[in-house]
Length: 116
Image 1 (spheres, helix red, strand yellow):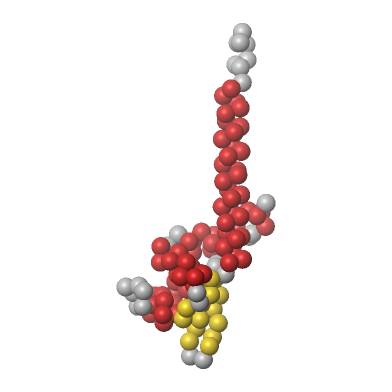
Image 2: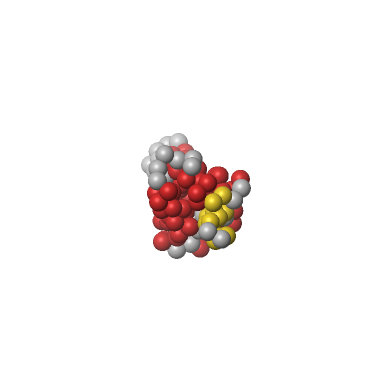
């Protein structure tokens, strides 16, 4: 299961990175097309340095990659990492569904000592 294939640190980084709306937006924008950090910064009401920090968090979580082209840093969304994150969420959903099914089975069992 994917949950066990990723280290606790990697899982924490993914959740931390995706917990912020700006970072989710950066991922979405860079999946559509690569963008420089300068281009990204124009979309947000925050400093260039703040956008750089958001990109760094995403990079540590491996949700984006950066490439230097001359003086610019080009950010790319990492589709493989997003697939792993989606598999992680799917694994947690499966755990939840399995638990819910077991609860339903337990509730449908006749009580011990009951005539039914």
